[in-house]
Length: 338
Image (cartoon, rainbow, N blue to C red; front, side):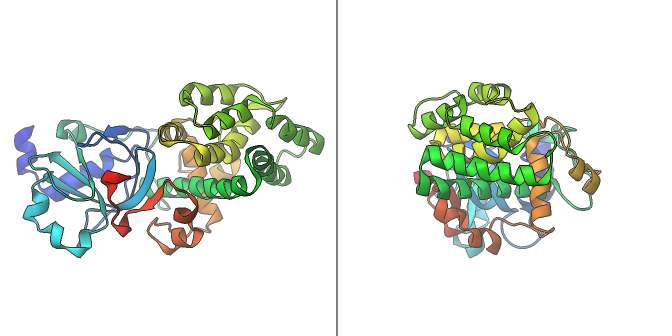
């Protein structure tokens, strides 16, 4: 296998690497022992500059958007004179198969085992065969939707505090839910009672624990929240409320460790059922995971516009101004010190 790595063209390995890092639920450890999750692998760059543009990574709880460069050996960074090239100042992740030299730069280094890379195939439930989306584009839409909701939640929490902010943010979602669907199933009074119960429920206790920076087992707690009724709501409405209201508030409150585990939950939790609207609009796209559904919904909201996280769209929404854990790699952050 080692000979194959040496002789195979770097551009061909690049595509294998891109496929390998496309699973957003996978956790890595960088060479400097930092926890890393690749939320979106970005797009393969066909032109001059870094190999992967607009990659999104979660580094020890910080969401960072930038570029990534791949080399067979870490020393190739210097051999290719990237340190002196302005095109590479936005690199936040250096992906290598062998770290033969420590590079003194402000990015993180991820060492991958090529045998795992070359033998990897994207799980069937992740695969996308569509002329509308690539996998990374759908991931970008899902991430943008979650960041947008988290940013909205943060603003409300700042103004209203946790209890009132929870009631307001969840109430806003329920109002939209009531206006669009299931009006025959849930009366206005029943939905109002649900919101009132929310601020005195196990869900509020969970958010209050996050706000107090208490140590929490996120996996067990999220399973409990998904399964345990708040009042008398059905499992579908409860999951909708959690994804659209509770999770964004939790991310806005969480410390670095809890934030990592909340993102893992988002990218690994299966959808309860299919949305008829999405089946009609995107019959060739899977709805196996919550993030896939959320990505399609965000695409519809954006009227089909392409989303790049280094684009004007993200700047206009102001994620970096509202969310302390959101960083843009193009500003050449010192990732060793965040």
